[in-house]
Amino acid sequence: MSRRETTKQETRQLILDAARKLFQEKGPERCTMRDIAREAGVSPASVVVHFKSKTALLEVALYEDIEHNIARAVATMPLEAALLARLMHIAQAMYSFYDSNRELYRVLIRDTAFESEGENPYLTRQLEHYLIFFGGMIEEEKKRGAVRPEVDARIAAASFFSLYFSVLMEFLRNPNMTVGMALERLALCANQHLTGIMTQKEKNDGRCT
Amino acid sequence: MSRRETTKQETRQLILDAARKLFQEKGPERCTMRDIAREAGVSPASVVVHFKSKTALLEVALYEDIEHNIARAVATMPLEAALLARLMHIAQAMYSFYDSNRELYRVLIRDTAFESEGENPYLTRQLEHYLIFFGGMIEEEKKRGAVRPEVDARIAAASFFSLYFSVLMEFLRNPNMTVGMALERLALCANQHLTGIMTQKEKNDGRCT
DNA sequence: TATCATATTTAAACATGTTTAATAAAAAAA
DNA sequence: TTTTTTTATTAAACATGTTTAAATATGATA
Image 1 (spheres, each protein chain N blue to C red):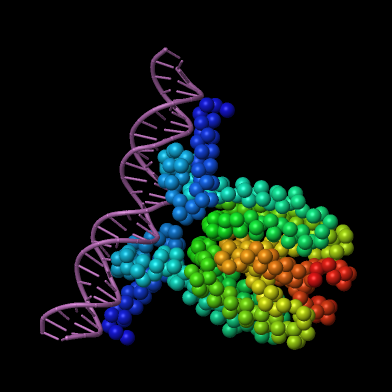
Image 2 (cartoon, each protein chain N blue to C red):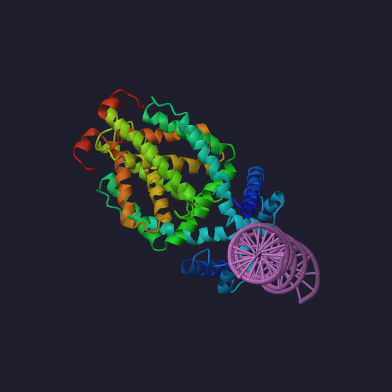
């Protein structure tokens, strides 16, 4: 790596460290690009040159941590547990993580969750990983005979994500909601998705296929 | 109403009309508060005095239309149809509506969906209305014997909303996704929620209750 | 009516994310 | 080595949402 390249990477790292510190301490809305630049010892323009925008910086600074947390949750997954328990294991890890700085992650998710695929590769990639991972788990359950064979595993995985994400949204919107309450709600919703809500009779009538 | 009050309301209306026009035409990110003020024939400060912030103005300007659209969808609801068909009727109406100006509604929802309850009364109220409405429909289905009696109707309604909203998010994030594709996906997810994914045997073992 | 208080509007200033144009330093070319 | 080109950095300017303080208009009060 050329001299020029190394100093560039050093500058980038200085900014990233400063941003992480200030975002965590003061929240992304109460720290300015100038604050971050000062903390990093560079000019505000340099921050923009290295990371396109404040939102992009927020994204780079935080999504890495989120990925680590996901990896940790996956690594500690109880493999023998039932599908619902596994989903709840991941959800517990993620909700607790976001709970450590709710305002920070509220702003992060708000600012990035509606970006298009190209603008937010992190989210797209994480979601895709999740779908493969959880979809695979559901396929396994089919083989074990716990999930019906005609079920579309990817749709099921996507549905679980929808339930997980909606509860997360409510959790971040409502400061009075605890991790425990969020988990309780998710468990109820996910359990319904596992067991369905229709009567057997109605299913046999084939009204919903 | 006093003279002072009427002129105030007139000013407010001028701003609101100007905002609606420019938001629709140029998109909320490409029209400034100064643009809106000029179009309305008032000062930029006046816009802030009447509507706290640009986001709040966006909210007031657009949520009313959304409410009208919901009301229209509810009014044209086929009452004899099955639960899934009714959900799809609402979803079709809403997705088509958002499709009329995707970028506009993407920004609106992004900027408001993560606000706390107090900051965004529209969303909270609309969601609550929906839960009561759809929860009531599910209770009816219980009486008809189409939905199992032990099912928590409110949780079921909330779950359907989660599925609806997640598909909407994907729809707004991904410009290549059509209304038809979104509806297709939602139908698959909602149908799974109706019928469940577990085998009967596993349910009898009571692993998920 | 004259005066005071209150509410509405606004010009000007401010705060902050971002862009631009210039500078300095490194790499490449001569 | 000297010159040229490319690249990293930044000071200054800009764009735009928002605040502040002043001015203006309205209603109440004497």
